[in-house]
Length: 131
Image 1 (tube, rainbow, N blue to C red):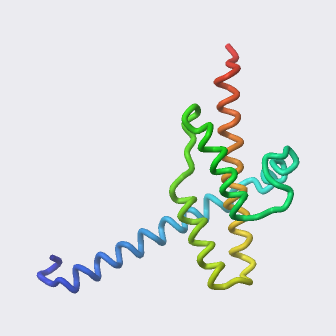
Image 2: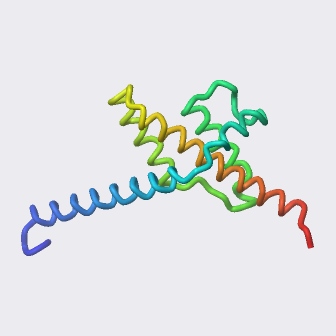
C-alpha cells in the first residue's frame, strides 16, 4: 500500500496503466507514420493483396503471410501494432467518419506490408546466399 492508503495505491496503479497505454499508442503512432505507403500498391500490383482495399482483410492477409515465413527469418508481428490497429478500429467504430483514423488504419497496413517485404528479402538472402 502507498502511504497506508488503498485508494492512493489504486489511483497510482490506474495512473501507471494510463501512462503505459499512452506510451504504447504514441510509440505506435510514430512508427506507423514513418512507413512506406507505396508498399501496399506494390503488393496489389503483384497480386498479394486483393484489388479492392479493405483495412481488416489486408491486415489479416499480410499478418497471415508474415506468420508463414516468420520462423525462418524471425520476423514477427509486433504486439503493439496489433493493439494499435484494433484500438483504431474501436475508435473508428465510435466515430465512423473520422478521416484521420481511416488514414492511420491504412498506414498500419502499409507498415505491416513493409515488414513483410523485409521478411521476404531476408528469406531470399537465406535461400540464395552470396559469399
